[in-house]
Amino acid sequence: MADIEIHTQALKIPNGSLQIDAYLAVPSEPGPYPAVIVWQEIFGVNAHIRNVTERIAQLGYVAIAPAIYQRQAPGFEVGYSPEEVELGRQYKIQTTATELLSDAQATIDMLHTLEQVQNDCIASIGFCFGGHVAYLVATLPAIAATAVFYGAGIATLTPGGGPPTLTRTPEIKGTLYGFFGNQDVLIPNPEVDQIRQVLQEAGVEHRITQYPARHGFFCDQRDSYQPTAAADAWQQFQELLAGTFANR
Image: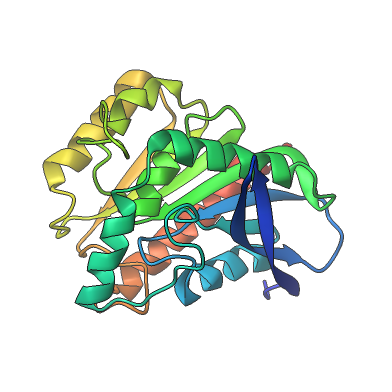
């Protein structure tokens, strides 16, 4: 099936006194459609994340990518050099789970105001640090499905400090798919095994897939890009959305 025509725009998501920059992509036809929140890597809502957001809209969903560094660095967007990685990590350690959940709820609330968005049909996808954020945000009642792409630290920490995000797993009500590389030095294989085990114990509907790949295998702008793994994960992500929203 050919990609459908879409429109894109930059907008602001209100969260109290904070105005969160976001990138929105919507099908041109009025809909309504399920919505997908796209959580950025440490590099900001850059060209890669905007492209992912557009690809999701071309599948027939409303897609939005909020900036998770709005408090620390409005307009932050960088590439993948070692210096830029270090800068992105500095902003990452300044974020907190409380802020991220608040921003996620503000994004959900804003989506509910859009006529193109189908009621009670919201999913979430995240990459790198955004994968960790997606796992965290999966605990919100509105999130029906979650795709975690190589989210580091889920089993060992939570943004801003406190018990690891993994301890919140019983709060997840929707379906969660996780995609990891078995050569990812940032996420040792035992941590992936732990995530799988805790999801199973919590009774969360899930699927965890590992590929012969490194961290960042989905991003075609990084030297760790692995096209076969990326294509398979993208196909599984589409199946997750289709299965979640088929009867809604």
